[in-house]
Amino acid sequence: MISKFRVLIILLLFALTWYGMEITAEVHPVPIKQSLGQFPKTIGDYRLANTFQSSADVIEMLGVDDYLQYNYINPENDVINL
Image (cartoon, rainbow, N blue to C red):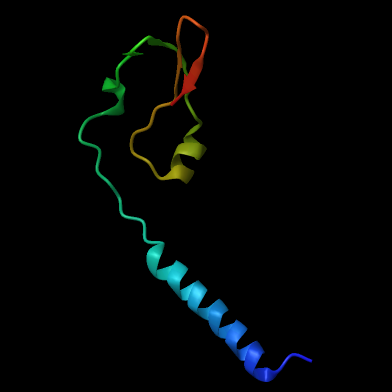
C-alpha cells in the first residue's frame, strides 16, 4: 500500500514541475530589423526555387507582421525549406 507521505511527495513534485514550467515559458517578442522580403535569393550553392503564401487566417493565427516561406534547391537537387 502506498503511504500518504509518498503520495504527498509525488503531488509536490508535480506542483514544482508545473511551477517551473510556468515561470520559464515566457515569450518575448523580437523585433525584426529589416523586412524579410529582403532575404537573399541565393545562399551558397542554393538558389530560390519557389515561394509559398499562407492564407490571411493562418497569418492572423500566427500573430506575425512579416514572414516568408522559401524553398531553396542546389545543383544536387537537395532542398531547404525556410
